[in-house]
Image 1 (cartoon, rainbow, N blue to C red):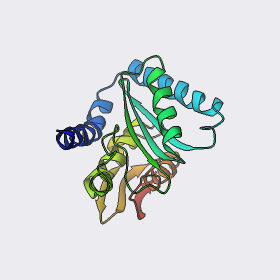
Image 2: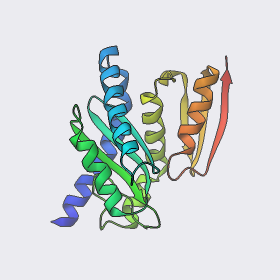
Image 3: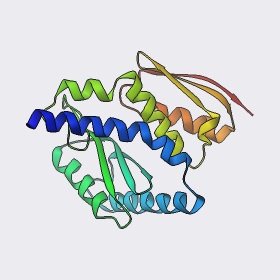
Image 4: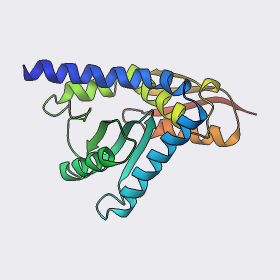
Length: 191
């Protein structure tokens, strides 16, 4: 039963990652502002926490669904980050994709606890990397997501499209921050 629950949880996380760009594209300006405000509140809370202040945690929000990406030093830091996000006004749910430094497994809303290499392989597969890059691009206010095409092969992310200089630099930065990315090939045209 526990294995079925872990598998079901992993499927739910992968689905939420894949669906997020579609949901993000359909948001109104008011929804985008509300989501950005939720992200800002969480980031401010992390900054004020002496244990999380120096951690590299990327926070993104789409319609109240918060995704946490990055690496933390231990399970206590991960649990604190997730609890703080859940406690933030406007948060409907939290997808925990935080990795523990030096740990072999990944987290996927708690689903990877005990799933070991299977979860890590799932979250760092080419389709998962592509979904994560697309999600981060869709959530970033400096980037117009339809302007950038994302493809991934063997951990190498290729970005194409016509973008402004700020979006260009930000897209590369976001793609490089995804776990499992070995290289980012920049084939974008700066307009």
